Image (cartoon, rainbow, N blue to C red; front, side, top):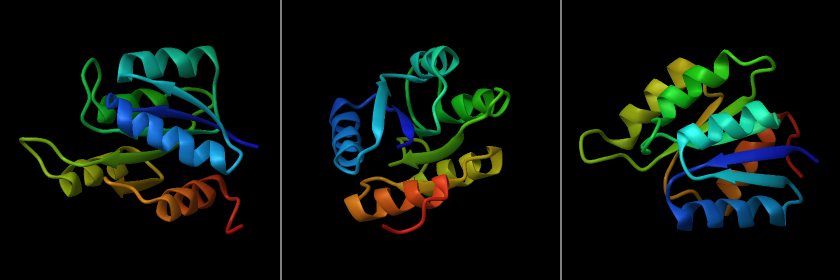
Length: 126
């Protein structure tokens, strides 16, 4: 089964995403911010990265940009609920332009998340 790295500064979101993905049999690692996420990916590459856009340390768009330069570059799903200055749609449009395979608006439902992961990994429906 695929390994997924979840990078999100919100503990509740990290815990929820990890639980959903582990319920489907994925191996899941987590990082609390973009800088830690990049460090984890460089130490232990994974099949897919799910990254929040608005975070301290490194914003999600910076993480996507850096991950695209890695060999191998992971597949990426960007998630965002927006911020005080931008809405989620703007953030996700930028993430898509930088190379995120899929983008999802928070809050993410179980079915949408799992289908997005399967589509991105090329696993298709269950």
